[in-house]
Amino acid sequence: MITRSAATRVRWDRVGRVGLLIVLGVLVILYFEHTLSYISTRQEAGRESGIVQKLVRDNAALMRQQKSLTDPATIQKDARALGMVQPGERPYVITGLPNN
View (tube, rainbow, N blue to C red):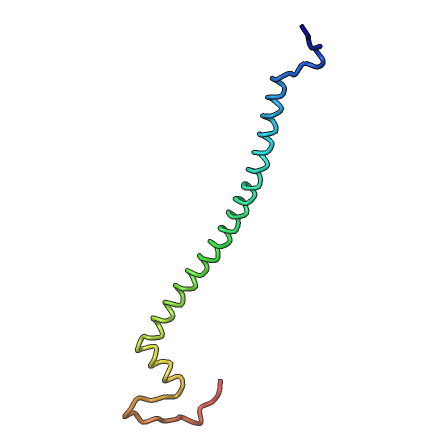
């Protein structure tokens, strides 16, 4: 019967451990890439959320301005500031007042 020496004998427990370590290393590398992608996406989402909040505030301010500009009192005040008069009114100008 032929016997193998201790040096040529295959140690299957070591082969199994090395194989598992290689598989673990590949999984770590694959998850590392996905983790970096996830972190990048989270940062981008945070920036986009800030932009959305600013746009919401701007929209609210514009809605208030639109409501103010469609108010008849505001329209009349702005028209009078431009020198306009309502139909039937007589425009007049006061001259000779001292300037401040």
